[in-house]
Amino acid sequence: MAELMIDYITSLDGFGSAEGWPGLWGMGGPDYYDFLGKDGASEYALLMGATTYRMFRGFAEAGEDFIDELTRRPKLVFSSTLDEPLDWENSTLVSGDAVEAVGELKRDGDLPLRTIGSVSLCRSLLTAGLVDRYRVVVFPVVNGATGADRMYDGWPDVRLDLIEARTLDGRLQLLEYAPTVLDGPPGTE
Image (tube, rainbow, N blue to C red; front, side):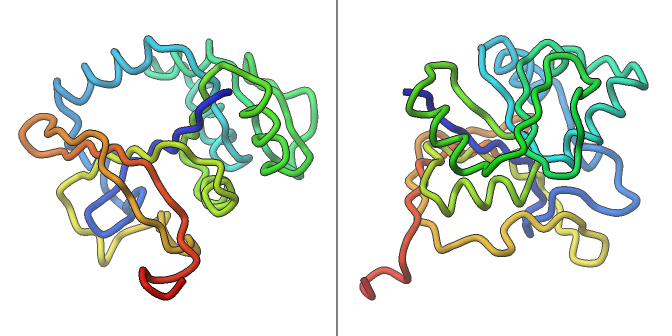
């Protein structure tokens, strides 16, 4: 059985990016990049939606160095707006129901699955109870005025049991949890 992990980066107030700020809020450092390199050495398939696919394909077309590792990986792109063939290497279009497809992949596969970006896809998979791990790197900024890509809007209530916590570059918090979707606040079930 394959394990599914949601992987996010976020500001303290839950935004995935911010208008006018550089990537990683300008705070990527040697510990964070070392973590990404070691993490990238493990084998897994990427799950993404159409918007995320278009963004990362654009990085690949522009020849961005950091994208090479993602290009070599198998990628499943869930979309009703894209057409085959997809032009980013190792990408497969899945036009059916994402929850059904990922449920089948988890049951029948053994290659770990991870999301990248894809807020609505992650929300659907979490709500369906398919997510085994939730990992987030929290950047120490608040983007109340400039924040974009709110990460948690529309999520169900979720209890998170801490698996790992560490500090990268003396400022970034890497947190990994096992999520449990709740029917309501504790004590109301």
